[in-house]
Structure formats: structure tokens, C-alpha cells
Image (tube, rainbow, N blue to C red):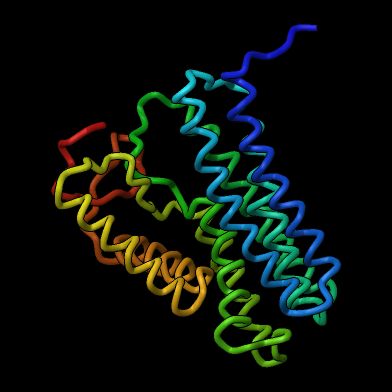
Length: 262
């Protein structure tokens, strides 16, 4: 039996680490006895986002990018950012709705799967640009659910969702699902050049995130980051100046760096 090389195995270990976070979040949601259990489950989703972001970077550093790794990453994302957040929301807020709540959780997971499948197909098109995602990325969708639950626990000291809040939580999950399968463009930031101004902005943003995290908890700071990303993407879609992205029919928007590639 041929043993895969280290440069191929190591990136996939990060992917499987993200999967473990998703499975652990599922288990915690299923076994939850208190709000602390739910909160711990929510923290595993951003941890999975971190690991998911590393696997591709590590693969490029080690020259270990493979078709197998891309497929494994998509399967992992479907579980970690689709099934796990959907079930987490069901356990936290939608269980009283029984089949209705289960359908909302399914719709969210299904949207994440469709989003990932579309991404894989589009990634094979060499004519596509890399400045925008088509639709909300699945990790950001999963983060949205985790941040919503963590916000309720941390800020409002909820032990569980209140009855009058459940319809709004379900509606938010449906909104995230729709955004994932939509063609609304969200920035990838892969085209950002690390100029002095950009470094200063990144430093200021990180400082603000850390400050809010120390003050209110890191899940609250991450929820703010998620909200800003969501609002700026929707704002650009609604009010931005439309142009064609590399001739493939996706809505994109002019920026001052349009002529600068990476």
C-alpha cells in the first residue's frame, strides 16, 4: 500500500480537524443540559472556520493541493457548516416546531450543500475571477447561526430561546440559506494588496475585535465581524455600481483596485 506524502496528508488533517469540530458541536447540541453546553458548541464553529481556512493555505505552502483534498474539504464543510449549525439551531430554538423546525434545519443544511457543490463546479472554470464569492460562503453561514445563539446566551443571558423569538430565529436561518444559494457577490479579499494603509486597517480591525472580545466575549466580537461582512455584502449588492465579473455574468462591483491582480 502506497503511503501518501506528508505534503498531502498534513492539509487534510486540518480539514478533518474542522470536521471533528462540527461533529463535536452536533454531539454537544444533542447532549446539551444547559446554556453553557450550547455556548461551547457555538465556539466550535469559528474554530472549524479557522482550521478550514488553514487547510488550503497549508496545502499551497507545501505544494500539496489535490483534487482529493478539495472534495474532502467540501464534504467536511457540508457537515461542519451545514448540518451542524442547522441541528444546533434546531436543538436551541426549533424543537417545539417538530417537523417544521426540522425542515428549517434541513433547508439550511441543503443550502450549504448546494453552495459548496456550485463552488466546486465554478472553481474548475479558469476564466473566473477570484475577487468575489457567488453567494454567502458556507463557513460564514454556519458562523451566522453560531453567533446568533452565542449572542442570545452571552448578552441576554438566555437559558433557551423564548417562544416569541423562535419565528425570528427560523427566519434568520432561512435568510442565510437564501443568501448561500443566491448570486449575491461577497468579497473574498484575495485581491487585497498589503499596502501600508491596508495593514493599518487590518491592525485597527483586529484591535477592535480583541477589545470587544475581552469586554463582552470573543463570540460577541465574531458576531459583529459576521454582521459587518453580511451587511457590507448586501449593501454592495443593493447600492453598488454593477459591472460584469470577468465575463461570466456574475454581479460584481467596481473598486479602486480593479486593475490590480494577485
